[in-house]
Image 1 (cartoon, helix red, strand yellow):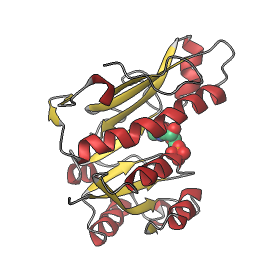
Image 2 (cartoon, rainbow, N blue to C red):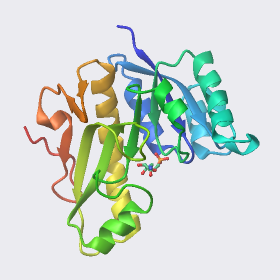
Image 3 (tube, rainbow, N blue to C red):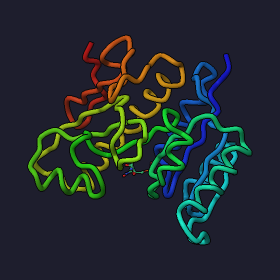
Length: 223
Ligand code: GAR
């Protein structure tokens, strides 16, 4: 089996990166994490990736005159490592249309909300302020519009009465670590196709729609 040479782009702690690397250690996983790249040389995730035996690189956005110059350097690093696919995992820079065009249909992002609700930042604070009862995370293909693009998979968790932004974030994050490897496995295996704004072709609902019925439980299959 040829595995899809995948880069994970991070800006910080890299817990989703950890989950993707762990999943890729299974030889049957269809993606190989060939590079972890950060725009912040001090991102804690870089050391964790190195410790896991994954190649790392940093392209510091601060030393470039503009976004496109920064992205051209990113692109060179990605080409050097013969990267075929990108997973954004807490990568906190917006891309220009130029970069997104290079990777259209070949770049996933994870967002800590049930898109299209709560695009942007502070998703957990905003969900609590709105009093929603269900919150979650979304894995989607990246398009030029921020936090838009065809949705591959989502996971829903309950919001509890005594939640703070931190407890809710932690509950969502634990499930991000489940849903992201699941989504990458499906995409990298070639099982899915994009039609307009929809991603189709999963064999069963539980492959793309996870519902965590209570705060402590693992995702329940809804097939
Ligand atoms: C995750 O919760 C991810 O969903 C979020 O940043 C966190 C990164 O954590 N991403 C975004 O907000 C992107 N808009 P991690 O570095 O531990 O994976």
